[in-house]
Amino acid sequence: MTNEFMFSRRGFLAAFGSAVAYGATAGGVAKRRDGEILIAHCTDPQFGLGPPRAGKLMTEEGYAHDLNRCLSAIEIINALDPDLVCITGDMTQSGMDVARDWPRLLKMYHPPVVVAPGNHDVGNRVTAAAVKRFQAVFGYDYTAVTVKGWRVISANSLYWWPNKEEALCAAHEKWFADELAGAKARGEKVIVATHVPPFVKDPDEADSHDNQPLAGRRARLDACLAAGAKFYLAGHTHRYAERMYGSLPILNAETTSVTGGGRPLGFRLLRIQPDGSYTYDFVRVDQGPAVPKQKFGIMSFNIRHGQGMDGQVDLERTAAAIKREKPRFAGLSEVARRTKRTGGVNQAKTLATLTGMHSTFGRAIDLQGGQYGVALLSLDKPFGSRQVPLPGKEPRTLLLVEFPDCVVGVTHLSVSAPEERRESVDLIKAAIAGEKKPVFLMGDWNARPNSDVLTAMRSFLTVVSDETGRTFHGRKVDGPAAEQEYCIDYIAIDSAHAPKWRVSSRKTVPDVITSDHKPIVAVIESADARR
Ligand SMILES: [Fe+2]
Image 1 (cartoon, rainbow, N blue to C red):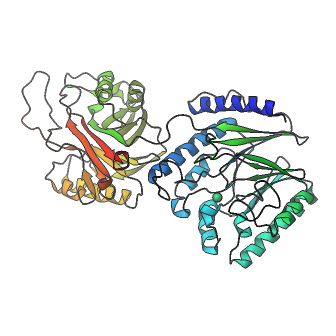
Image 2 (cartoon, protein in one colour):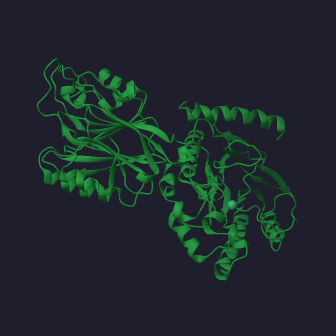
Image 3 (spheres, rainbow, N blue to C red):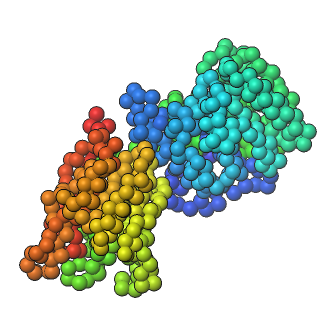
């Protein structure tokens, strides 16, 4: 491999990576030659390390940054379609309490994934309890897989740092030796992967936080060479590095959290030919903003399936009413999906197209050959969603949509009976209990500010929308003001997170044409954004 070749490939892949991130198709870029193996080497995704840290061990904003970059990496990896993804540790910044998103992420990779634990995952001095917590999330702390005749041995290098778990270390040492011997006996080519690299520059360098202890270092590397190991993949140092131990290249990839040396964020693609020659190319994933905006608008709007007060169903008018307020999230009630009365249109999707946002639909009931319910429009692409069925003569639903930095809920509570609304409140409370991210909840709750339902909602939510505005109007075009106009639409933040947010502005939009409800908007700002 020449540097020149590597440089040109690096530029190509960087461009390709960003193209994929913005939705272009792969177009066969990662096609393999016969016998070639492609491994995506990612390291130190370290959720919680990323900027902005403000001198703290980890911040929720840093977590969202790292999670966003990891999601971009997954998208690009899936398009590149490597044979294996090898993540060499530090999945988290501060242990398994912040590993909450990893089980779901692991399912998002199309290729098989092997993971080695890092010191941030299981501690600088590994303990049985920390290993157990790691195993509960990832299924193992050391493992080996065979891909296209290559044996990839992913070890737990923290057993090689000083610790008191003698029995665990002995079992791991035996497994490692057996794996090397077994691969050699089977004629498999070997790749070893660990979090902590054997050494940074010199095989005999003094012990440090950046290497494996001298005692045992050369013996282990010699054992790798004796077994015919061809590559050693590592992480931990947050720096790109390639160095040799005899014929064994030791390769450190860049990270998707924080990379030293002024290098951009990304991962490496190791492409190995049948003759053992290889390229080790950088794939950049730091295109576009990763830190979600900390000041943004939230809109709640009962759109009455797009039917305005002139009787016309006009989604372009509905979309214009949403776009005018430029919200990051718009929670919509009374949304039809492919019902007869709305011409078979998927209203959430159509509104998403018209507003340039992403849509998530939450079905409450089947109606006229289609469905009817709520929807969330969002500027950001959702990370996941779930629904909780709510009671009602006409059944209702709570739609919860997850983003890296928050959870956004939309619900349209029953109009028929107060008991059904009260019961719904308990179900909503249970659904968001224990959520670590801020929860923004909105919708047409069919209850007035001084009602029992709102009192119950206030036991766990802080309303941030305008409660003086008469959100339901029911006015005919050019007709007199309706007799009954009152506030029944709300935007709220879960009370545990509410103190971290300030309401910059709130309003009831004086639009009495687009629907029988007026849109409401709250612009909120996090404490971190004001620092
Ligand atoms: Fe580390």
